[in-house]
Length: 435
Image (tube, rainbow, N blue to C red; front, side, top):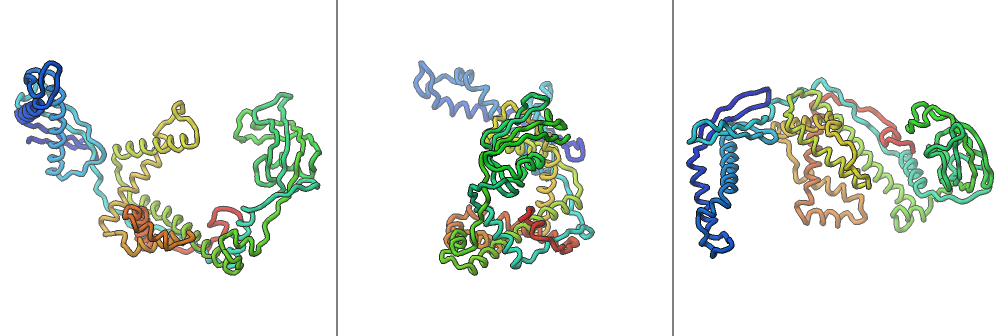
């Protein structure tokens, strides 16, 4: 087989090849003979259809299949001989139709994977969040759990922050109603930011059965552009005021949290263990993001456009599926894959860098590490032992944990080679929310 390799760019290559036409003709002839033995056609017994008719009916299709297979085989052999690592899919075109009649020529244009080494991380600084879980963190978590189970009781006084109120309201701008300016039986908790702070302030001290009228100004950067920067007049009727009642931290509360005998000491131990697992998870996720960014920053490389385009399409499909899963129709939405360009490039770069890092440093997921992650995961269930047994009963169920173990080892490698400094953080800062 004749081949010629051209370098078109940093990563782009063109491979020109030719295969003997007689090999194609012979394979086509053999396939048509086999086909003639089984083909059924009206007016002929099975296996008795004249070869000329078989050729007329099936010849073009068979020849196309044979040429396609020959081209793929020739391309695969050529890239193996040239020791090329093809990125994405090749663009194959037929050669000069007026060339050598004894040869079937074609060209394949494609990209190759870049050759690179993972950069030196010695100068990169990574801050590692540090948080010791103590009684204060346990108390804060218990308060969060109480708030998640809050009940509201109707009360006769005026509304205060934290109360749940039910209102009717009507608003106008320059005497005209506007979209979103009216509501019936709208329930909201004062202070949670469901309405503009200025609007909520006018609800304070109103008791059920009372009404109020006021004017507020929408911020200039308000999301609804038709009302941004404008003043609106509202009338409000307070229909119900309910004050929050947090559950007491007692045996019943402990039972609700999964402690059968209601022992408060056991409850605190379990809460602390859960918080420690969550802290560990959040610290790992923080370090993972920083480690991946460190790899990208330290390792500039040329990216195959074909891989970026594949990633763009995958991300666009995933975004559409997510929107459709929420009941949003996407067939008429302007959906430009290029909106994911930067993220797609980062994903491709990380995939290449991590792959090279794993290969060149022999990083692997050990059975012991996988087992550790499985058992840690199982602790969040009522019967951890049963969960572990179920996961190990089918090998494919462990694939997620094998991936997590490998990822964890990559992060460890980065931390071992970068400058890591511990930074004490608060509970709220790490959890990303106020307790």
